[in-house]
Length: 133
Image (cartoon, rainbow, N blue to C red):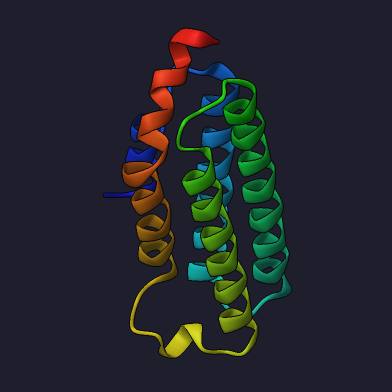
């Protein structure tokens, strides 16, 4: 799986969510490219901040929609969002502490896995809300 291929997997049929998913993948791609080309610059830290903000906004949008539609799995999906935000914070801290270089996993692989797991385990179920929007 790659970040680019996630764009199709992220489609829910809900335009606002699909647009936010594409923005999220774009930020992730920019972060990975910057990290690969200049891993010790302030630009990487700045892009981690942008990623965190984008993820937070994406999750807020999803959660609002799930509340409005009385989505049956809202609580577990929100819990997963909280876990994922904690993982982004952990990645940010690991980068700031210089641990990314010694991790043995590329940032791209780390982010692909992070997002793909959530998409497969939670976001695909949001497609059921597309008929209601």
